[in-house]
Length: 212
Image 1 (tube, rainbow, N blue to C red):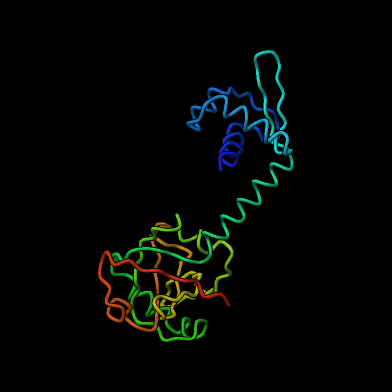
Image 2: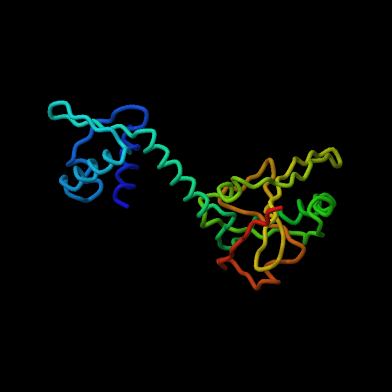
């Protein structure tokens, strides 16, 4: 664990693609370990081929090797895969009342592309994890609900991501133009989710991506 912390800290200090000047005391203070422990870790990491360390007088320079960079990339991929696996944890919040109007307008397209008759309204979920809704969907292909023109008004494309909430399938919809920040997920479903799942403002919910 300490080696991972130190390797990450070195990357933050510019030891990627070039040498970064470091001090044992400075690294130790950031990691809350002794300078002697930092020196031991650097020696071990150099022996393992993760870094290259050079000493010029009283100055120490460190560069992460290709092997070290590959190690960090693999670690990043594993962490991302473990965390961003299509799960959204959030809490129910009140919307501004426009969801029902837009769901009614898009209802025929939702029926055609998502296969269900939508309840005229959305469940707004404030995302607690991950950081934004886009992090949860970074490797998921959305269903594109095509835009249309009605009574001289243009309705843009909408990205829809199929999700399941407590056994009920629905979709998180993200309009091409939206006033909601990326921390709010709007969920459409064939039922009134607040009533079906006994939800109120502040209720904790978990959305699971349905991969197709």
